[in-house]
Structure formats: C-alpha cells, structure tokens
Image (cartoon, rainbow, N blue to C red):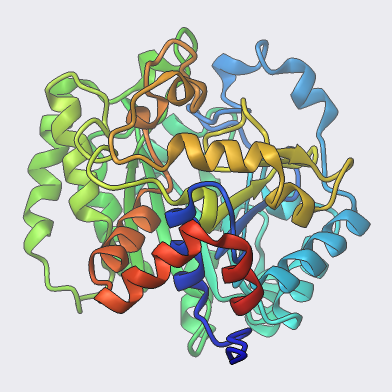
Length: 403
C-alpha cells in the first residue's frame, strides 16, 4: 500500500527535531537567518567585536574593506530561504544595518515576501521619516542596542559619539512607540560592561519612559587581550544582581517585559564567582543551532551559529545558501555540537576566545532557541519519538515522505 505524502503537512519544528535525531541531516530550513548587510558602522561601541576602539588595529583590514552583501546575492538568498521555509530574517551584523545603501529596500523586500523582519540597530540614523518608514514597511521587530539609560553612560559606551546622540535616539524611539499601532515590537538591548554596570536602574526606567515593549540585558562577550579589561567584574556583577534579581518576580504581563531575565541573572551569578558567564547554562540543553539558525556575514560567509565565524560552512559567493545548508561542513557542525555537554576540540573553535576549551561558555546567543527546542523535545509523545527513530534510521525514506 502506498503511504500518503506528508509534504507540507509536518511542522518545521518537527522536521528540525527529526534532523537532530539523525545527527547530520536537515529535513527543513532554519527558522531564523541573521543577515549582516554590511560591516560598515557609524559608531565604535566599546566592546563591539569589530569596531571597538581597542580592536581597530587588529581588525584594520576588515574595517577598511567595509564588506557589504551585494543586492543580487541578497535577493538570491531570500529565494533560497523562502524555498527552505525560513520564517524570520534578523538584520544585524558586524556593522550597522542602516548604513547599508539599500537597507529600506532590503527590509521592504523581506516583508513583501512574507518573512518576519527583525532589525537590530543603534537607531542613530533614524529620523522622523525613518520612523514612518519602519511603520509603513511593516517591520515586525526593532531592537535598539543602546547600552545606557543616561547620557553619561551612553558617552562612556560609545566613544567618539557626541552625548547629544542619546537624546536623538531616545526621541526617535519614543516617537516610533507613539505612532505605531501593533508593530514594530520595540526592545531596548543593553550589553553590560565595566562602563555601564551602575546604570542598570536607569536602563529599566528608560524602557518604560519610552513606551518600549521590552528590555533585555546581555553581558559583554570579550576578545582576550583587547577588550577583556572592559568586562563586568565580580564586584560589578554583584551590584547589578542587586538590581536585576528583584525583576525575577516581575509579572510576565507587565510592560516593558524584561526578556531573558533568568538567563541574565544566571550569567551574572557566574561572573560574580569569576566563572565564564554561560558555564551554568550551555551544558543543560542540547545545541540545535545547526538545524534552526544560520548567520550570513557581509562578506558572504555562512556560519552555523552566531559565534562560529572561525568555522564557516561556506560562502554565498561560491555556492547557494541551500547547497551550503545541506553541505558537508554544516553536517559536521551539527554532528559535533548536538550534545548536551559541550566537550571536545570542536567547541574550542567557537567564539572570540581562541584559547577557550568551550567557546560556548563565553556567551551563547542561540541559548533561548536551544531551550525552546529542548522543551519541545521533552514534550514529544511516544508516536512522535517513534517518528524521530524513523528519520534516524531511514532518512531518505523519511525525506521522501515529508519534504
């Protein structure tokens, strides 16, 4: 008896879990792809992986190139991602997305094709017309990377940027929140460093004052020998914890929502004990990034998790995204990183610290997605688990039936 085809009827998340069960293969595309439109930036934030003042000499060649994704390459990428079933394009990068010459076209094209368009920006290039364009295009999410709740902290974390820019950014964001109806959902994003460790109460208050939907805190991921002197010290971590721990009991319905507060507190507790920030987090769940996520860098490199820039899976200037996604390098990453316990030489190739035995412990930006997928995996029924066994043992037959 011929079995009925399940093509188009199996949720992408289930197909991703089937790929995880197999170990190397992908039966669906990534849920989210971060697209770095450009490496160029109009600011030099203190712990930026590319443009930090302390990294200017180290990164001089890359900064001088100001790589940007060619327009035709971007359109071809969207074609591939649509065919793979990707739902979200996350515009961020080594540089500032709004510096990209055709950024408004890029956002509009993503929305027109049905993707969720999420923009991570310093927001310093948004004026009144830009506010309206974000609304008119229908951008779904805007994350403003501010790193400060006051002018003084903004000046400390954005050397070379005039302090008055803080007012320009916050005024534009307030106006966006005032004009919008349902989107974009807005979030203030703060990377915690030695320069802004005592500004946390102002950061929370500012999000509420501006009418933002959410606020989120991250600890700085540092480059040893260059920016590590700017990290949150154990004493500073304890001071920040005194401000953030009370937010653990904040009702989830209150706005602004404090996103990832459990993880932020766990990271700061580790730092308060002079341990890597994610030492208590990354070893609690498997890594699903090889099936759920990819990052396209401005020079065309495709990397399999946000911090895997030293082990790219391929380059869009040589092959299509689909070929890279189903290629050998991506399969190797999946097989090597799918474990709960992140041990082995492969994990030393992830992140900014080349001497780290496990770069994931220095800061995993895919943690929230991994936690969500782990929850889904734990909730599977016996029938669903049997389906995963089929995907593991007979992947070609499973693929023919479902994709």
